[in-house]
Every structure is written in structure tokens, then in C-alpha cells.
Length: 112
Image (cartoon, rainbow, N blue to C red; front, side, top):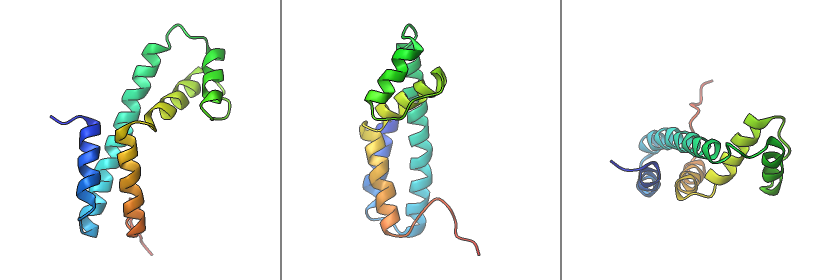
């Protein structure tokens, strides 16, 4: 079974030649995988940060370029986001989303 990153890379590659309807389905799948990967990263950060003080976590997120956090949970979430954004899976999803946007495809259906 493919990992989240492997599947996101596959989806990004497949999106290059997909029709709009297929591209939207790939975007939905990629979005779900992106959030799953982010949640897994958050679990890893929580496990690694068990003995780190909240004040240190808040300093770490400021060093990562994020504004201050209100509490430990927010700090852990921001650290996870900072770490996840630099993974191949997250970058593949970013490419997929940008490609879809250039084609006018998004997750929200237009209804008037």
C-alpha cells in the first residue's frame, strides 16, 4: 500500500493530464490525504515534544515564522504545520492545487 506521500506524488503526476472532472476528484482525494498527513505529523510532534515546555514550543513556532500561540495545543498544531509544509507530500499537494486553480478547478462547487 502506498504511503500518503507516495499517493500525493502519484495524484500530482496524474493531474497533469486529467480532464476537469477527474482533476476535481484528484483534488478531493489529495485534500483528504494532505489533512491525514498533517494529522500524522501532529501526532509525531506531540510524541517528540512530551518533555518540552510550552514556552519553548511557543519560541519554536516564532522561529518557524508563525505568530505566537495562545496555548500548548495551538503551538503543537503550528509546529506540525510548519514541519508538514516542507514534506514532499505537502509540496505535491500544493502543486496539484496550483495546477487545478490555473484550470479553474476547486473543491467548492459553483452554485448560483
